Amino acid sequence: MSSVSLKKDGLDEKGEPLSFYQLEEHHHPEGSSTMLGFWMYLMSDCLIFAVLFAAYGVLGSSYAGGPTPKEIFELPLVAVNTAMLLFSSITYGFAMLSMEEGRQRIMQMWLAFTGLFGLCFLSIEMYEFATLIHEGAGPTRSAFLSSFFTLVGTHGLHVTMGFIWLVTLMVQVQKHGLIAANKRRLMCLSMFWHFLDVIWIGVFTFVYLMGSLR
Image (cartoon, rainbow, N blue to C red; front, side, top):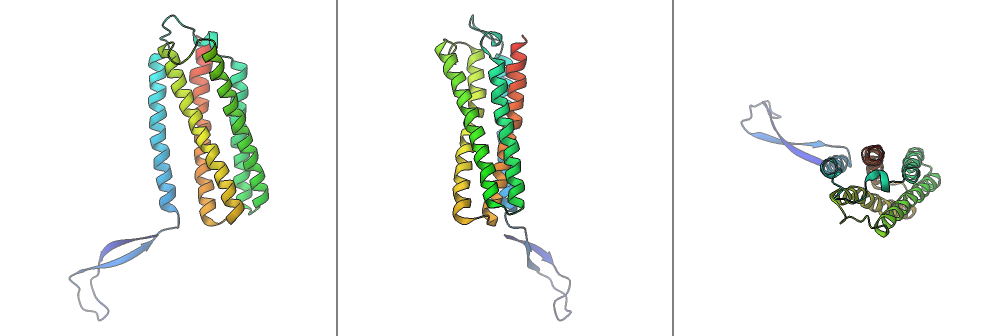
């Protein structure tokens, strides 16, 4: 891509002074605007999760006579779920290394492992939600549970969209190979996936771990 800027020249080709502005093109690396735009998106997502964390911090102790975090959270199960997401970030890192080396088949294998770990994470989270609702600890039971389901559910929705994006990219790579556009998309998904990993570490620490210690 290129942008156009105004540059004032003192002399023209004949050495005569100029009194007007001349257009000059500046070339930028291909895809630079895409990466900048995606960074801006991630920053906006940070604000969304910051608001949800703040809401949980305010409402997380409003039990309304209902269950407390210590009574409903199963830390061993949550720890396994956390491991699934961490493993998915590791396998995605291996996929990016394979991409840089041009090893498409190996990269696809690592992406498949990433998707598998992502599915395990979502399955465990759905099981947790279904169990809580079955036990009467649904999102309408108290302000604590409303903020909990909103925060964790929003993260789970992001992981779901990331999984769909991952599968779509695997199909695109299979059809068109490791072209520049696909590499750029894989890098954007890499940032998104690791971002979700960081957010989940905050959820695990702030919501589950600290909640179980109350």
